[in-house]
Image 1 (cartoon, rainbow, N blue to C red):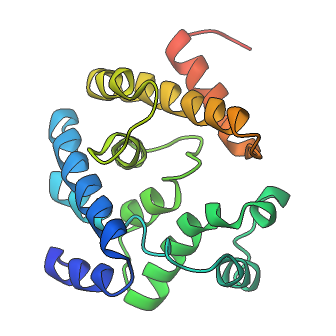
Image 2 (cartoon, one colour):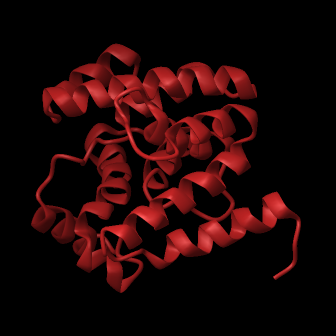
Image 3 (cartoon, rainbow, N blue to C red):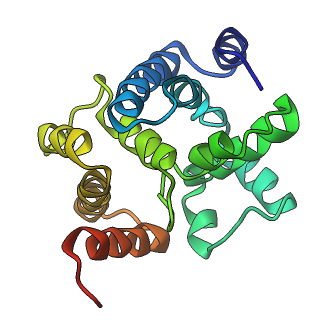
Length: 193
C-alpha cells in the first residue's frame, strides 16, 4: 500500500498546482468526513490525494486506455471522455503504481458518477470532491450541511445538483448518474418505484 508521502510525490508529478491543491483539499475534507462517520480517516485522506490520478490526461488518451482495457461501460463514455478519468485513474493506480487496496480503487473509480451499492468511503470521496473549500456553486452550503448529517442525503442532493448543472449547461447527462440518483432517492425517501 502506498504511504501518504509516496502518494503526494506521485500526484505532484501528474497534476497542475491548481489540481494538486484541489486534491489536498479533498483529502482533508475526506479525512474529516471519515472521522465523522467512523471510516478509516487515513485511508480516506490517501484516497482524496489519489482520486484525480488521471485528471490531467488528454481525452484521446483516456479514451485509448479505456478502450484497450475494456473500461467503457456506456456510449456516453466516448461522448464525454473526461468522465473516464475516474475509472482510468483507478486502473492506472493499480497497474502503474501497484495499488491493490480495492476500497481505495473503487472509491477513485466511483468519484465522478457514483455507483449503485457505494461504500461509505465511496460516498465520502464523492462528497468531499464536491464540497472541498475551493468549490463554489448554488446549493453548496446545503450540500455541506447534508454531507455532515447523512451521507445518503448528501449523495442525493449532490447527484441532483450535478444533474441540474448539466441541464442548465446543456451537457450530456450520464445515465449512471440518473440511475444512482434514483437509487439514493429510494434510500432517502423510503419509497418503492
